[in-house]
Image (cartoon, one colour):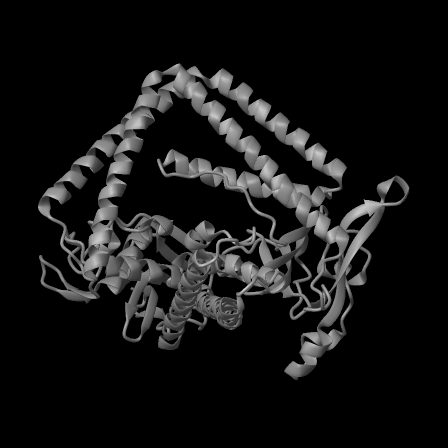
Amino acid sequence: MPPRIYKYGLGKNIEGPDQRLPDQVFEQFRLQNRFWNALVEIEKAHAVKYDELRTGADARLGAVQERIDSMNESLEHINSDIKAQRKNARKVVPTDPATKKQIADIKGQIKALKIERKELRERIKGIIRPQAEALNTQRLQEINDKRREFAALGLYWCNYNAVLNSMETARKHILRKRAQGLPADFTFRPFTGQGRLTVQLMHGPPFSEILEGINTQLQLGPVPDDTWTSPDRAERRRLSRTQGRIRIGSEGFQGREPIWFEFPIVLHRPVPEEGKIKKAQVSRRKVGLDWVWELDLTVVLPEVQPEAQREPQTGAQPGQVRKVQHCIGLDLGWRKTDDGLRVAAWVDSDGQQGVFRLDVGYVATQDRLDGLKSVLDKNRDQITAQLLDWGKQHEHLPHWLDLQKVSVVKSHQYFLHLADTWANDRQEADQEVFEDLAQWRKRFVHLYSWHSNLSRKMRYRRREAFRLFAKKLAETYTHVFLEEFNLAWSSRKKDAEDTPLALQRASNKWARVASPGAFRQELQNFCNKTGSLLIFGKSDKASRTCPECKNKIAKDMSARIMVICEACRAEYDQDLGAAANVLCKGMENHFGKQPEDLAG
């Protein structure tokens, strides 16, 4: 069973009124950031050497890559022109046939060149394998040397292992995207005060050992027995407050005495006693203008075997007792409707069907968030114009006021820092512009904090809705069928000539808001917990297949809810139709039966 993460909030009084971190914690955060950037340098240098090695083996590869880059630039210029025309006209301007043909020709050439590049890379890979292995050995040696260097500087071994694991995860993701022909690269990270403190609990102690205070990596203060069982919520909240501490280093004789970082914590729920805690992580991150501290416990639970026998029951709804081979098919996606935002449609083996959606209130709040962001951007543009006007009227400007930078920077944090700097270094005849900047700062702090906290609240609200629905499905059905496809790829931004600008923006926005990938992850977690089988399968364009006659619809009808089959003239909800197709295909592959055969 995959590990589960138990998350706990820490108290707000960790840093004190001056928001100053303990020196040893600050140093661990800073060293981790420096270690990450050092690893990025190593990876970038290795990528350059590997590209030179491949290009040197066959010059045609470099020539093909140059042609691909050139055509991508041409395509980007054309798309930019189309977007500019639509922006100036403030409406959808149809793309002329000549431009469409030009775009299609360029895309066809790029596709052919990518196939040629892939074939060249595969051929070259076998030729340069010994040199590539030597290059990779050199990379690993450089990483190991850098690890020793930062360990000597005082970076705790658990923390540098956490950075190495993050880098390895990022490396796999980047290599996978590069293999798909997509742009991807390692990025340097500025130090902003955010960070994490990690400990690895090698033997997987139970939660009781952590509460007893005998573990040398993590200790949490004991709480009363009725902390999680008291019927009074206020009493549970009061009793769950305790102290904890996590190891951030070693000192003393032979470096065996732990250095602790102590923190207040709210243990709002226990970890199952049969679970083994393998890792703990205290993180500090910025939400709005405030710092938020959290403790994450990575827990491995015993494997739950799928239950073979259940008491038969017909007409079961989500949340009721399961029966043998009670199956459901799900179609995930996003669709904004008058009654909310659809995230999933479902059809089960009893003929029941429905949709899971985020309600109208959630959608309205997302629109409010967009409105707040729009106001923030307008206020930033306004203060930018005021600063530029004032700067042009004065010859001698302070060194920290760069008008060229002011004119191009879009970061709100830059102007916030500028306001704080200006308050400590007033200039001659700056009363009016300084008051404007101070007023902007006041509005920004209010609106930005509002936006950040409301956004966080809505993410938690969505997560809770996902968990409740996933829990019902996992407890009701023994087999859950999903279509196997890449959600990230399906939610990618469309090209300008393919989709109207307004529809592009709306689709990208609601894909992000619906977050079907997050729901799929919650469903995976609860299926693992209850023993239900989550089965992914290829259903051959389920949303374009009629659930009645299985006719394939050639035209893309994704913008519509109700569609009519061209063959049998049946009208159906295409989301529910896709769920029915997923169910039928899944049951046919898994049981060799259709839903009606299984029900009989």
